[in-house]
Length: 189
Image (tube, rainbow, N blue to C red; front, top):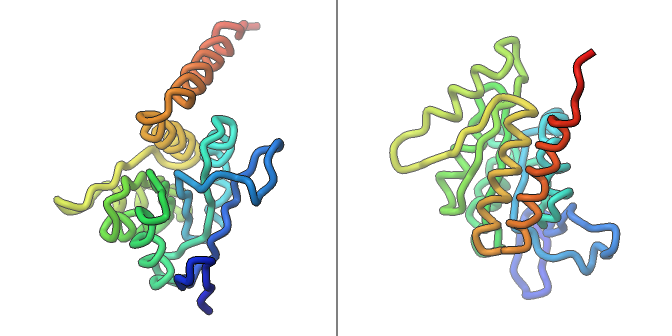
């Protein structure tokens, strides 16, 4: 079922963002700059690491289920409309055959960061190989398997957005400094 936006345009996916800050209402939230998409709800456990970091860094983002195999029309519309909607980066996670990142990258010039999900008995190696082996001309920045890859995808997305946002650059510097302090504060038994 299509939804109709205020400007009269039609879409088959909801235009709501999942991003908000405690001090802002959902209606006042800025438009998302990073899209976080996954093939199914079961991928959320991996992508939660990315969403947490984007939220901590106050990077406006949205998170949606967009399946390459079960909702291909939604996937194509999401990718084709990403630039026009103002997305600067898309983080796409998938397990198994892991076609989502590559198919999204084929339909947009917005950078796509692929996160392999350990969803099969191959523990994500199948997904990693699927995402990393893109043909020339359709790049996908491929991250590590699982939660570490999701966290690094969020940081990389924030770094891309920070190219035009000095305040975000400072938040990234502070985030890294805090991680250094955590390590320096660790003691062995």
